[in-house]
Image (tube, rainbow over all chains, first blue to last red; front, side, top):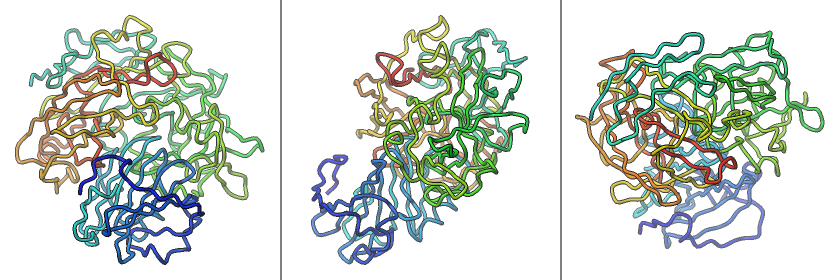
Length: 151
Length: 402
């Protein structure tokens, strides 16, 4: 089901807990505790997509919201961000960060960035004070989940 | 599509000698052609050329910076990128004369303020210093600007380098500096004045940099908004570019909107932008793209184009259709004012291979960065006069008009 509403339409369960779990793209959402200080944010847990995935939503002090999409097996298959500052992409992308840096360096354009590689699709757009983006590993997308749902 | 190939305008001692009758032929459906602009206090020549880093579709100008209050200690720097998608002046440390004496900005404890400027494709790190800024006949005094790649602050905090690749050199940045003349007055705004945010502003004692709260007035900000006059916006006027491209394109940057006879809105339509994001809306192919923006600092148009192949040659990442495609979309302001915009997309590999020395192309595009984003980069500006009205300076701004 393609959810066209932007942020609304997401059932948010606000949890009054400090950030205790976050996981990079490709990591295990359930097991990662070590990252809790890295993003300096507060954790909200959003559930949507039926039983297809769980969204961990973090809000950084800048106001930027980072969403991590975890499959039922706990693996984070996609991430998305939106807000006034760029997220800590080394943390958010995990092992995919260097792939992003290398691709960004190699192009001959300034402005929004689109990377489409077999193991990484990433988009980074917007402008100063209003950024947005998404990244996912197409090999990890759960059955029935479309890339446009990662946002 | 009618195309007029304009001879380059002559630049002599900073004075624009306009070529009569050649103001651009209008890009596709655009009806308002760039005016012939005569020399004036508020007019600065701008140029699209291959710049210091062999780039395409970057528009540059000269900016003079001086030690605050010392008109005898100045330097004019060429190839400063004009960017309506960011705010503030940033200059590469490597192009500054050692004799130019700028004042380091300090926090309440006297420690240097250093910034991590974030872009969608990388970051720029360096100290914030005060300078008097002169462009055309306008001047802004004691402007906080960023010096990028200053060897005095070579250690980049992890939270900064974690936002992307470094753009701390002329080659990686693509310019000798950047003049951010977007709708926002500062590069961060209230958020950085109320809390210390990782990856933006830092206080840097010798023991190491820490995220810092930096007041609005100390943040890097749009120098045009600090001019004594003509400070409520900026107008970019560029001629149209023929389908094969141009080696260079010359146009004008006019300061102020409605402040002089040469910057009146005239028949231009005003499109208000979201005051928090600077975004407006694009309607295209029966979909609504809420996160759209008009940005002279983006090199192409970023939009979804179905299964159009992406180039594998020198145009890598851009669209490479087998033949030129024509499109129409509608730009819509937050206030619902709207106007149709036509554009073409050609095969970037073919264009670059046919004329490897050309710097200006009106028909380059690439996939969009978000399912809700349609980014109008520099090709949109060719054959148009585009007004960017700053926040807080006009009763109806911030807005874009064309």
